[in-house]
Amino acid sequence: MMEIGLNHYLVLSTILFSIGLVGVMRRKNLLILFFATEILLNSVNIAFAAISHYYGDLTGQMFAFFVIAIAASEVAVGLGLLIVWHKRYNNIDLDYLNTMKG
Amino acid sequence: MFEAIAFYLFAFLTIAMFYITVTTSQALYALTALAAGMIFISAFFFILGADFLGAVQIVVYSGAVMALYSFGMMFFDTTRELHEKQGNKYIVVGLATIAAVLVVLIFSAPILSNNITALYPMVEGAGNTQEVGMVLFTKYLVPFEVAAIMLLVAMIAGIVLAGKKMDASLTLMTEAEIKDMRKQKANKTKEIV
Image 1: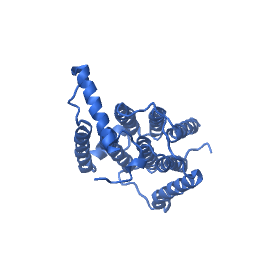
Image 2 (image 1 turned 90 degrees about the vertical axis):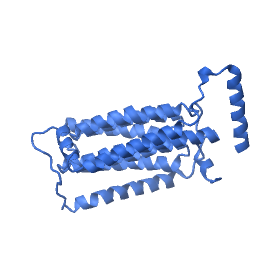
Image 3 (image 1 turned 45 degrees about the vertical axis):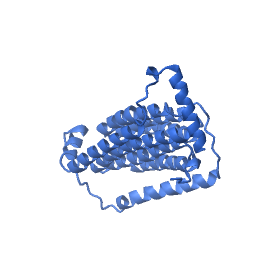
Image 4 (image 1 turned 180 degrees about the vertical axis):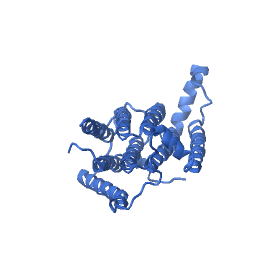
């Protein structure tokens, strides 16, 4: 219990990943959906860093860096699209996004 | 001992913050809780000895991503409560848990089979930042440059998408012009809806 091992971090990562998945599946607001995506990416980063530490290998940390870079660019593009959508339709609800009117 | 205390404390704080993020009905609360959770996650990186990753986490997430979100939220009406229809709570929670456990199993299966060896073992007597630099600029140089190009593309995409019709400055317009613009906008929304 007092000795923190790899399994502790993996369990924590699983819990955070489930919280993120619940957010993605339950929320209808697109902004909260983006937040939940960030939670998913961060929980995976914890798992990467923990494995990297307990196996003495730097590859996990490298992957975590690239995940952070991808998350940053995803936010930039996604938020731009969200602003365009909000300007046109004045809401950011997922329920209004179900039809492709062309 | 101290490591265990720090781990449990930050695990509790992170889970609580992210729980608030996905359950609150106020977008502003979700944003602040997410920012706090990101900073708490960097604590795990510091505990794990990945100092550079922890610093990058604070700088990129709490600095860049959260600032981007808060600027983006100025466009949206955030004071309004988010109304959402709720489905079956237990099915969603159960599905999420199953999916998360599956992902962890996929990750840990090759590790548990015990034939993992360190590809780039940590160098003795070098700090974490130094090691990261050595590996990043030798083995991962090409992915690093590709990531730089990807960030550039994302930046241009963000500017092009969000910067549309931003040439009209409200401070340089007269009251009549602003009223006229608002009326046009209202008519346009009516047409679409």
